[in-house]
Image (cartoon, rainbow, N blue to C red; front, side, top):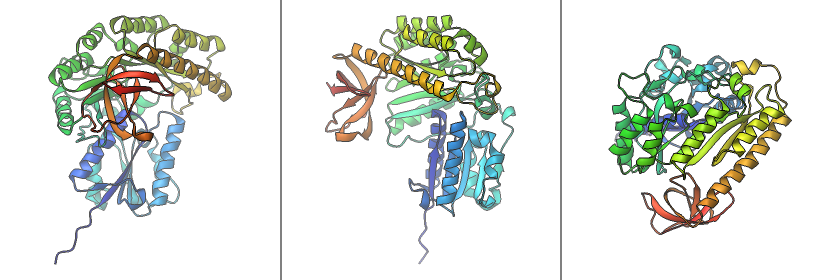
Length: 442
């Protein structure tokens, strides 16, 4: 009698952005194609892959904590650490105390497409460092996701890398130059998602507005979205964060005309003060930013328009902070992502004079978060008793309710229907709740 084959198990951990989540989903797909079971139990895993983040000092600390936890709770598994923290702090990771070098592999961002193959190949190919020359990388690592398990929405990474070099940001050093996925590969991934049953795709990247500029094909992000919307009319597309000056008239017209490109912008503001913007190396003024937002609102009156805003940048005076607060107060935005400046070693801003006291930063964060809640509730109130299209998520909330987002990114809570619809449904928004809007399927 032949021995029973024992299937290997892998545990995956992801920190950070949507691009990391896409990449980890690709690792999952590769593992499952090779017969490896992906488990949620760290202690029973034969392999562990940790996809790290390093955008802030706190994110780097959390990444190291996740690595130490894996090594502590599972003393048999091979552990692979990849992602931005692994790319920049690989020497520090290999010097973690009390680790067996034979168990740990640190893989750079440019080796993610071959990571699973090397991991499963066994001991001979499992060296402590798998790092290429990221600065010379001219093509995006090819990764395929078979399905985002348990989700009706899926992330689609079409671009990697950044060349903006904002003074507070380490990402260009961790991700390399801007690189785009060829159009045919983008369409192939969308086809895979369509066959897997996904009905909304979030198009994302590290600097997604730079899509196509490095390709021989004549295409930019608006052109790509145009091809996707008209090539896959049954799928809703949503654009992730895009820089203000990359919101073109062509993109606005497409969003107004294509019924399946969701009316939703997430725009990094970072500061509403011109002097702070200049020292951040952001390439626009508060006047230009306001004009972009006004144009978005004029073209798409119902659109969600969210801002990223940083407070406590070195040298930010009370008057400079007030310029930010005033700009937000007087623009028609929908929601805010507010965060304090984090002193990230390796960036120019970490060495700037006049670092802001933590208590002052937290006070300013609180002020803007209150303003953000006020803006969100005002936006939700506009749509009470109206009908919007919603794609419901599969996971249940307390009481058996389901959550979802309208086309214009209003979070809704819906009493669970007898049968879960796999495509967008029409709902009536009836009541503002704490962090969402109660809606009923019509």
